[in-house]
Amino acid sequence: MPAGPGHDLHVRRSCQDWFTATSRAIDKHSPTGYCYAVRRHPSTRDIALTDSTQTAPAGPAAARRPHLSIADFFGKYGVFVVFLGLIVFFSVHPTSGEAFRTWENAKTIFGLSAPLAVMALSLTIVLVMRDFDLSIGATMGLGGAFAITLMSKHGVGWGLAIALGLLIGAAVGAFNGTLISYLRAPSFVITLAVTTVVYGVEFAITGQKTIFEGVAPAYTWLGQNRPLLDIAAQAWVALALAILVWLLLDHTEVGRYMYALGGNPEAARLAGIRTRELKFLGFVIVGLGAAFAGIILTSQAGASSPTQGVAYLLPAYAAAFLGSTMFRPGEFNVPGTVVGVLFLQVIQTGLNMLGLNTSVVNIVQGSILIGAVLASLVGSRRR
Image (cartoon, rainbow, N blue to C red):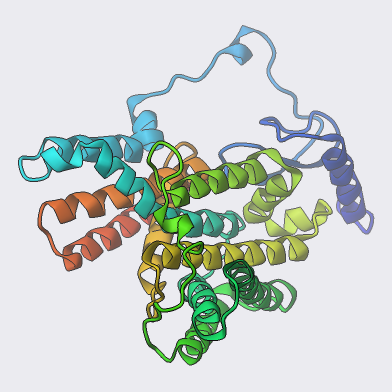
C-alpha cells in the first residue's frame, strides 16, 4: 500500500485487528493483512513490518527444523554451561569442595540469592522495554530502612510498616515513570538523579545509623524462617515472584506489548499500544520490587544499614544481562535472570570459600557484567 495520509491509519487499524484477534503470543507473522506482527520468541519480539503477499514456503522443506550447530548451542546455552562448570569446579576444589557440595550450602545460596533475585526480576521488566533504572539500589535501601524506622522509632505494626515501605518504593517508581514516560526525559539521567534524592531521604530518615532495636519478630520471619524443605521463606517468595513475572512477560497481552515496545517503540505506537502507560507501569513495578527486596534484606538481617542497597545495583544488572545471553540470546527473559542470579551467588560463595576477599569478588562481578553485555550485543547482531 503506498504511503499517504491514510497509510498510518490503515496500518494502525490492521494492527489493532491483529492484536485483538490474537489471544496468545505466536512465533509467526500474521498470515493476513498488512500489519505489524509481534513475534513471541527470541528476537526481542521486534515488531516487523510484513505484507500479506509474503507467503511461507510449502512442502517438506518448510517442515524441516534448522540444524543446531555447536556454535549456535554455545551461543544459546554457553553461560549456562559455564554456570554448571563453576558448580563442578567449586565442588571438587580441595579448599572449597567439602563445604560447597553440601545441601546446607545449597540452602544458604538460595536464601542469600533472594533479595538480588527480587530486584533483578523487577529490573528485567524495565530492561525488556529497553529502558534503565539506576535508582533501584537506592530504592531498595529506602524501602527497607523506612519499614524498620517506622517500627523502631514510631511503634508502627510490622504489617503496616511493610505496606508503607512498599508504597514508598512504588512512589519512587511512579515519579521515575512520570518523568520518563510522559515528559520523555532520558531514563539514564533521571534515575541517576533520583538516586541522589532517594539516598538523601534515606539518610534523613535513619540519621545514617544502623537501626536494629524495636524490630518485630514477625518482621524477621520472612528472612529467618525455613518453612519448607528447610529452605528460607524468602527463597520461596523469590521463586513465586519469578513465576509471576514469567507469566506476565511470556503469557499475557501486557507482556507481549512490553516486548513490542522494546523492539520498536514507534511501531508499537502505530499498533495502538498505549506505550506511555505501559512504560509507566514498568517503572512502578521495578520501584515496588526494589523496595520489597530491601524489606527482605532487612528482614534477613533484622536491621537496616545506611546505603545497604548500593551493593545490589551492579549484581542486579549483571544478573539480567547474563540472563539475556541464555535461552533466548539477545533478549531479556525471566529464566535467564534467575540463572544469572544463582550464577553470581555461586561465584561469590565459591570465591569466599577459597579465601578470596571482597575486592576480588567485585572485580569478577564487574568483569562478568562487561562480558554479558558484549555477549548480548553479539547475540542481537547474529539475529
